[in-house]
Image (tube, rainbow, N blue to C red; front, side, top):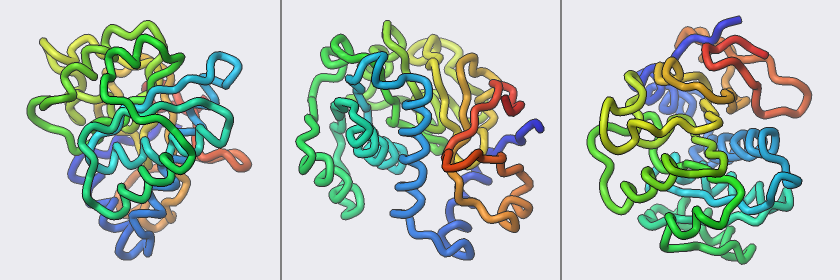
Length: 236
């Protein structure tokens, strides 16, 4: 089976559908998305490869997924560190950050320095809705991930990439191609430019909604929240 792509407009509409006719709350969707991301990280980088995980979180839903993933990774035995420079005033994000603070997970202010002493990086800065220029303080984050000597896993989209066209043709982010991509719900068109290990995560879409948006829900195994596929979308 080859999985179809879900463009930016369709992905945004699907999110709204899940929270209306699908009867999910944003808290539930973020929890399930973050759980799937944490399982993908565990699959590609088990604790035996190094427990230190640096998680870069943006101010929106992608960052929220990263905060949830960090909590699960802590419970799996990792040592997460959070870079979250633009904290949202939204109560949901405040609660997610508080949960990590209660676990005594450290928050850092200098991502490039922290990136030099970690075993894995989780990129949860920008998701499928990103467009335009990368604004401060995130250019330094993108550069550090481009130059990273440790594996990088991106949530839904490599940060700085356009959902349709992939990486910028030049400049910041043009040479950023993470080792792992976790596509949430369904792959986005940018995966045509991706060369690493590719997972689909988010085990919550009802068949009727999948039919409406014309994409396939992968066959998840057992309690898994992720399915590994080839970069082109073929299930492994």
